[in-house]
Image 1 (cartoon, protein in one colour):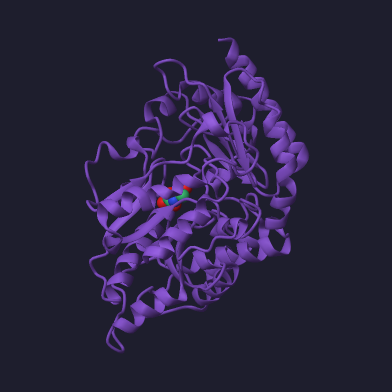
Image 2 (cartoon, protein in one colour):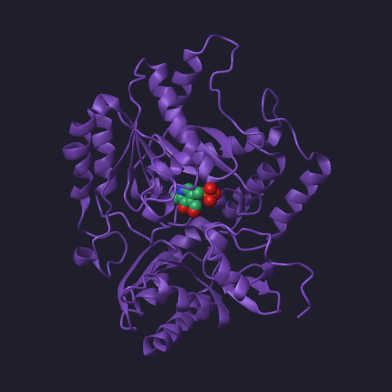
Length: 442
Ligand SMILES: Cc1ncc(COP(=O)(O)O)c(C=O)c1O
């Protein structure tokens, strides 16, 4: 290994145990297809698509070439009052992939910004229609909607909020849908729990009055808090309650978009069309930061038409909205997904993946396994008084053994690139099995 030509101290790493990391750093220096290469030259099988984003695998030549060509041609184009062709082409392509009349696309640079943008659009939409009193935003416990103030507030992860006090004030949360007592070891969508959506009608609406509620935002499948698969009928029920009371339904598809669940979006997979979708990650195959909000035509039209002619209709946007490098990466990624039929591939591989992960059921400390598409959560029993420690040890050991997994609390989350082979699924599961046996002994 080459001696390092940098120190570790200056970089304050995000969502990372900085002291632990800096005492035993884990550094990637290259990546190709299903593997990372570490600074000491080891190959690590990517079981997490980086951070749920590299759906087509790493450093795919088509995407790399598109970004190279774009950076040589035009590095940047102003996002406000000017445009460039790539931004329009990608919007059109994304609109075609989205279900129903979700056919307008607002660009951001991340999932967090997409969530903040969707929440602001919800408020602007109601205001444009003369219902400016609709300002309550409803999230869900155990939801993750990024790290901005908006996303943090509607999110339901205590650790992400407790240091920062009350952020957005007019926010409430539905209960989560994770009930292992009823649904442990479910394959695909659990049978029990559609009625959990009724809390919107039975508690939240009476409390705030429906006429004050702007939007409900949920991840159709909650990823970051440990792969919480929506019970059958739950999302459908949320949809119908929102319809009944004129509340917008936002699906945060930052993780579930672009084939993860075997179709373009989770909404397509479960047959529920939201009013807005937030996307990011897989949109550019993780190559260049980019997010977006996809909105229904009626929302776009209401906001646009409420403004006087030839004036700015929505006072919102980012310097890098629709950045040329991001749109080049997105265009090439979307083409690649289609050429290689990767969403269909994920769907075809899902049963194999499901059987493989559920084979870990008898391993020490495993208390639940759940899956949908090419996502799985393996929940371990927490060590008394040391929540998260057991799974983190598994993560470190798996890394030593040459596979990358992700853990949240005591849950191992798997979300491999959609190009993974059956043999690589076996490798992933075998290494996790060996690891669980080893840590089960101590
Ligand atoms: C559902 C969901 N929303 C939003 C985000 C935030 O995305 P970003 O980290 O790009 O801001 C994430 C990130 O994992 C996510 O999973």
